[in-house]
Image 1: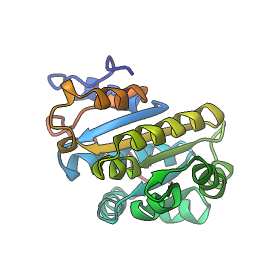
Image 2 (image 1 turned 60 degrees about the vertical axis):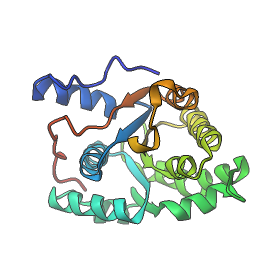
Image 3 (image 1 turned 45 degrees about the vertical axis):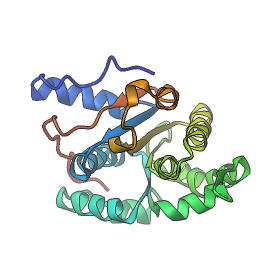
Image 4 (image 1 turned 120 degrees about the vertical axis):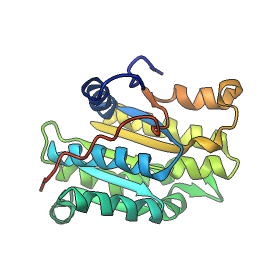
Length: 216
Protein backbone atom coordinates (compact mmCIF):
# COMPACT_ATOMS: atom_id res chain seq x y z
CA UNK A 1 0.00 0.00 0.00
CA UNK A 2 1.27 3.44 -0.91
CA UNK A 3 -0.03 6.79 0.32
CA UNK A 4 2.85 8.90 -0.97
CA UNK A 5 0.90 9.84 -4.09
CA UNK A 6 -2.22 11.14 -2.35
CA UNK A 7 -3.28 14.66 -3.40
CA UNK A 8 -2.35 17.35 -0.91
CA UNK A 9 -5.56 19.19 0.10
CA UNK A 10 -3.54 22.41 0.29
CA UNK A 11 -2.04 22.03 -3.18
CA UNK A 12 -3.05 24.09 -6.20
CA UNK A 13 -5.15 22.57 -8.99
CA UNK A 14 -2.35 21.65 -11.46
CA UNK A 15 -0.45 19.66 -8.81
CA UNK A 16 -3.63 18.03 -7.54
CA UNK A 17 -4.65 17.11 -11.09
CA UNK A 18 -1.25 15.55 -11.77
CA UNK A 19 -1.62 13.40 -8.68
CA UNK A 20 -5.14 12.37 -9.67
CA UNK A 21 -3.91 11.26 -13.08
CA UNK A 22 -1.18 9.19 -11.43
CA UNK A 23 -3.72 7.57 -9.11
CA UNK A 24 -5.98 6.81 -12.07
CA UNK A 25 -3.13 4.76 -13.55
CA UNK A 26 -2.73 2.64 -10.40
CA UNK A 27 -3.22 -1.10 -11.02
CA UNK A 28 -5.53 -1.34 -8.00
CA UNK A 29 -6.75 1.66 -6.02
CA UNK A 30 -9.23 1.90 -3.18
CA UNK A 31 -11.34 5.05 -2.86
CA UNK A 32 -13.14 6.19 0.28
CA UNK A 33 -15.90 8.77 -0.12
CA UNK A 34 -18.18 10.79 2.09
CA UNK A 35 -20.71 11.80 -0.55
CA UNK A 36 -21.88 10.60 -3.94
CA UNK A 37 -21.00 13.81 -5.78
CA UNK A 38 -17.27 13.58 -5.13
CA UNK A 39 -17.27 9.85 -5.84
CA UNK A 40 -19.12 10.18 -9.14
CA UNK A 41 -16.94 13.07 -10.31
CA UNK A 42 -13.85 10.95 -9.69
CA UNK A 43 -15.26 7.83 -11.35
CA UNK A 44 -16.46 9.80 -14.37
CA UNK A 45 -12.92 11.09 -14.88
CA UNK A 46 -11.49 7.59 -14.44
CA UNK A 47 -13.92 6.15 -17.02
CA UNK A 48 -13.59 8.93 -19.59
CA UNK A 49 -9.79 8.87 -19.51
CA UNK A 50 -9.79 5.07 -19.94
CA UNK A 51 -12.14 5.19 -22.93
CA UNK A 52 -10.14 8.02 -24.47
CA UNK A 53 -6.99 5.87 -24.19
CA UNK A 54 -8.70 3.01 -26.04
CA UNK A 55 -9.16 0.82 -22.96
CA UNK A 56 -12.37 -1.06 -22.29
CA UNK A 57 -14.35 -0.16 -19.16
CA UNK A 58 -16.41 -2.25 -16.75
CA UNK A 59 -18.56 -0.59 -14.08
CA UNK A 60 -20.09 -2.71 -11.31
CA UNK A 61 -22.14 -0.36 -9.13
CA UNK A 62 -25.49 0.27 -7.49
CA UNK A 63 -28.24 1.54 -9.77
CA UNK A 64 -28.07 4.93 -8.07
CA UNK A 65 -24.38 5.23 -8.88
CA UNK A 66 -24.84 3.90 -12.42
CA UNK A 67 -27.52 6.54 -13.04
CA UNK A 68 -25.34 9.30 -11.60
CA UNK A 69 -22.37 8.23 -13.70
CA UNK A 70 -24.47 8.11 -16.87
CA UNK A 71 -25.67 11.65 -16.22
CA UNK A 72 -22.15 12.99 -15.69
CA UNK A 73 -20.70 11.20 -18.71
CA UNK A 74 -23.49 12.51 -20.95
CA UNK A 75 -22.94 16.02 -19.65
CA UNK A 76 -19.24 15.70 -20.52
CA UNK A 77 -20.08 14.33 -23.99
CA UNK A 78 -18.38 10.99 -23.32
CA UNK A 79 -19.71 8.65 -26.01
CA UNK A 80 -20.41 5.52 -23.97
CA UNK A 81 -23.06 4.38 -26.51
CA UNK A 82 -20.48 3.88 -29.25
CA UNK A 83 -18.05 2.27 -26.81
CA UNK A 84 -20.83 -0.10 -25.68
CA UNK A 85 -21.66 -1.08 -29.27
CA UNK A 86 -17.99 -1.94 -29.78
CA UNK A 87 -18.02 -4.10 -26.65
CA UNK A 88 -15.72 -1.68 -24.83
CA UNK A 89 -18.15 -0.40 -22.19
CA UNK A 90 -20.22 -2.65 -19.92
CA UNK A 91 -22.14 -1.80 -16.77
CA UNK A 92 -23.74 -4.15 -14.26
CA UNK A 93 -25.87 -3.51 -11.21
CA UNK A 94 -23.96 -4.36 -8.03
CA UNK A 95 -26.52 -6.78 -6.62
CA UNK A 96 -26.44 -8.75 -9.88
CA UNK A 97 -22.65 -8.90 -9.63
CA UNK A 98 -22.91 -9.89 -5.98
CA UNK A 99 -25.13 -12.85 -6.92
CA UNK A 100 -22.74 -13.96 -9.66
CA UNK A 101 -19.63 -13.78 -7.48
CA UNK A 102 -20.92 -15.44 -4.31
CA UNK A 103 -22.49 -18.67 -3.09
CA UNK A 104 -24.76 -18.35 -0.06
CA UNK A 105 -23.38 -14.86 0.47
CA UNK A 106 -19.75 -16.02 0.50
CA UNK A 107 -17.11 -15.26 -2.12
CA UNK A 108 -16.51 -18.21 -4.40
CA UNK A 109 -13.36 -18.60 -6.51
CA UNK A 110 -15.01 -20.75 -9.18
CA UNK A 111 -17.77 -18.16 -9.57
CA UNK A 112 -15.16 -15.42 -9.81
CA UNK A 113 -13.25 -17.23 -12.56
CA UNK A 114 -16.47 -17.87 -14.47
CA UNK A 115 -17.36 -14.20 -14.13
CA UNK A 116 -13.95 -13.18 -15.49
CA UNK A 117 -14.27 -15.51 -18.49
CA UNK A 118 -17.78 -14.39 -19.38
CA UNK A 119 -17.62 -10.65 -18.62
CA UNK A 120 -14.05 -9.44 -18.24
CA UNK A 121 -12.18 -11.27 -20.98
CA UNK A 122 -14.53 -10.14 -23.80
CA UNK A 123 -13.88 -6.58 -22.66
CA UNK A 124 -10.15 -7.16 -22.89
CA UNK A 125 -10.55 -8.56 -26.42
CA UNK A 126 -12.57 -5.50 -27.49
CA UNK A 127 -10.05 -2.96 -26.19
CA UNK A 128 -8.43 -0.73 -28.81
CA UNK A 129 -5.41 0.17 -26.69
CA UNK A 130 -2.00 -1.44 -27.06
CA UNK A 131 -1.51 -3.44 -24.98
CA UNK A 132 -5.21 -4.22 -24.61
CA UNK A 133 -6.37 -3.13 -21.18
CA UNK A 134 -9.52 -2.93 -19.07
CA UNK A 135 -10.36 -0.28 -16.48
CA UNK A 136 -12.83 -1.63 -13.93
CA UNK A 137 -14.54 -0.02 -10.98
CA UNK A 138 -16.99 -1.60 -8.61
CA UNK A 139 -18.55 -1.85 -5.19
CA UNK A 140 -19.47 -5.48 -4.61
CA UNK A 141 -16.64 -5.48 -2.08
CA UNK A 142 -18.36 -2.57 -0.35
CA UNK A 143 -21.63 -4.51 -0.21
CA UNK A 144 -19.82 -7.41 1.44
CA UNK A 145 -18.29 -5.06 4.02
CA UNK A 146 -21.68 -3.46 4.69
CA UNK A 147 -23.18 -6.92 5.31
CA UNK A 148 -20.65 -7.48 8.08
CA UNK A 149 -18.37 -9.70 5.99
CA UNK A 150 -15.06 -7.81 5.92
CA UNK A 151 -12.99 -10.99 5.49
CA UNK A 152 -15.01 -11.86 2.39
CA UNK A 153 -14.47 -8.36 1.01
CA UNK A 154 -10.72 -8.68 1.55
CA UNK A 155 -10.73 -12.12 -0.08
CA UNK A 156 -12.48 -10.71 -3.16
CA UNK A 157 -10.00 -7.84 -3.31
CA UNK A 158 -7.25 -10.48 -3.33
CA UNK A 159 -8.91 -12.29 -6.22
CA UNK A 160 -8.84 -9.03 -8.20
CA UNK A 161 -5.14 -8.63 -7.38
CA UNK A 162 -4.47 -12.09 -8.75
CA UNK A 163 -6.33 -11.15 -11.94
CA UNK A 164 -4.18 -8.02 -12.30
CA UNK A 165 -1.12 -10.28 -12.40
CA UNK A 166 -2.57 -12.15 -15.40
CA UNK A 167 -4.11 -9.41 -17.53
CA UNK A 168 -3.51 -5.72 -18.14
CA UNK A 169 -6.07 -3.86 -16.07
CA UNK A 170 -6.63 -0.94 -13.74
CA UNK A 171 -9.00 -1.51 -10.84
CA UNK A 172 -10.87 0.99 -8.67
CA UNK A 173 -12.90 -0.10 -5.62
CA UNK A 174 -14.93 2.34 -3.58
CA UNK A 175 -16.31 2.32 -0.04
CA UNK A 176 -18.28 4.93 1.96
CA UNK A 177 -16.01 6.29 4.67
CA UNK A 178 -18.93 5.96 7.11
CA UNK A 179 -18.35 2.18 7.02
CA UNK A 180 -15.13 2.75 8.97
CA UNK A 181 -15.96 4.72 12.14
CA UNK A 182 -12.46 4.22 13.56
CA UNK A 183 -10.19 3.25 10.62
CA UNK A 184 -6.94 4.16 12.36
CA UNK A 185 -7.53 1.47 14.97
CA UNK A 186 -9.18 -1.13 12.77
CA UNK A 187 -6.91 -4.04 11.84
CA UNK A 188 -9.28 -5.21 9.12
CA UNK A 189 -9.28 -1.72 7.62
CA UNK A 190 -5.50 -1.83 7.39
CA UNK A 191 -5.63 -5.29 5.80
CA UNK A 192 -8.12 -3.98 3.27
CA UNK A 193 -5.87 -1.06 2.36
CA UNK A 194 -2.88 -3.39 2.09
CA UNK A 195 -4.59 -5.20 -0.80
CA UNK A 196 -4.26 -2.02 -2.90
CA UNK A 197 -1.44 -0.19 -4.64
CA UNK A 198 -2.93 3.23 -3.82
CA UNK A 199 -5.40 4.69 -1.35
CA UNK A 200 -7.66 7.62 -2.26
CA UNK A 201 -9.24 9.48 0.68
CA UNK A 202 -12.74 10.90 0.54
CA UNK A 203 -12.55 13.97 -1.67
CA UNK A 204 -14.96 16.59 -0.29
CA UNK A 205 -11.98 18.88 0.39
CA UNK A 206 -10.58 18.64 -3.16
CA UNK A 207 -11.49 20.83 -6.11
CA UNK A 208 -13.25 18.95 -8.89
CA UNK A 209 -11.45 17.79 -12.00
CA UNK A 210 -13.85 17.34 -14.93
CA UNK A 211 -13.85 14.40 -17.37
CA UNK A 212 -11.81 15.01 -20.49
CA UNK A 213 -14.48 15.15 -23.18
CA UNK A 214 -15.61 13.23 -26.24
CA UNK A 215 -14.47 9.69 -26.89
CA UNK A 216 -15.75 6.89 -29.12
